[in-house]
Length: 437
Ligand code: CMC
Image 1 (cartoon, rainbow, N blue to C red):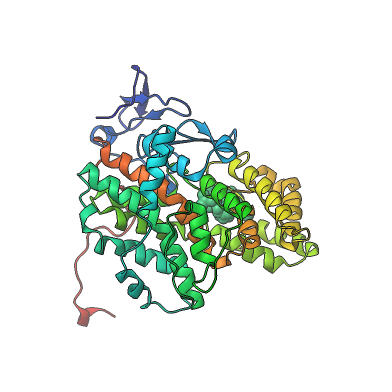
Image 2 (image 1 turned 90 degrees about the vertical axis):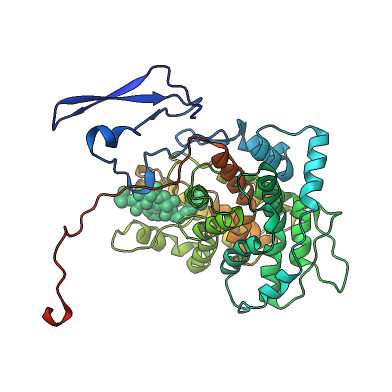
């Protein structure tokens, strides 16, 4: 049953074809827009609704993440993203997203230990990696290996068993950094590094990425903190394309590893998580500040498919609060690392300045999004461009998993099955091959 209240509010539609009135219940949001329940619309009007890209369609109830796109607000379980980025850490944020409340010190310790003790992957997975070309894009590898976890962990595939779901959730959050680092190590021909249980989540990831068996590797605490913050900022974002993909895949009863693999595939696109890689490629292509006007002109030209990557958002029409934290982080990290003349940062800042003063961008409410500055930080800490979206996937796994669990527990959810406006041929007779011209 749906938990939403309707307080007897309703919405009346008048069908101009028949002059009939249709009453549709309105469900109240705790904050943000209410929704009109259209579930009986088809039965009563013989019409579907039409909303390509789901710009006005709510697909589920959720208690996890709230966005106010006009005010630039992002809340995880009611907590402001800026506050979490400043005061929390990624493990605590994961707990919050999964369980709904911030943990007590004991709950946090137990959770972190639980995640830590699931970071290793089945040894057979390392041979699995060797089937890929060395120059494979790491996101291609991630789609494959994360889906393949379902072939390794048979004891956490029963989606109707809460314990199986919990174990699968821990496994996914814990193993993503290990698999991500393995994808990177494979691409550069270095040995895989086993996770270390004495390191915290972000540190452990950096160790597996940059350590080698030949010498001790000390993770820079500034870099580890920056990475942890980036993970918090990307951890969830309500019903975006990849999360909706995970929910849709999961709605058929598919196993969690397969669902998260579907989410990774959706995230990879340049309009979504792939934008962080695309931003850096774009900044490199721009190359010097004097070429910025040329690229702004191209972004405004409707006959040119070029878009300013890292700009615009379906929901944020004021500013992306994650981008604000990311911009501040970017300066802090570069200062801490003693990088004072990062040319790409200078180009990014100038591009942002020019775009924000441009009528086209003002009118269309296009602001820098989370991906605009993240790539510059990743680059400064030595992450190769092709790994940027992989890092987004590592961070977003907790959000996907939390949303997937919420969906399974929501008794009002059915298999996702959108309708369509059919505009093809009506029924016609088959013409045998010899009679076709
Ligand atoms: N550069 C130039 N024009 C743009 C841009 C851009 N980056 N983004 C949107 N527009 C224009 C677009 O051409 C359209 O113009 P018109 O109304 O004249 O046809 C108008 O702004 C609205 O754009 P839309 O594509 O209808 O809006 P959307 O909500 O479907 O798309 C978006 C949102 C994020 C896909 C889009 O802004 C975009 O492609 N941005 C660049 C890619 C990017 O940075 N993606 C990361 C998103 S944030 C991270 C994440 O959540 O994954």
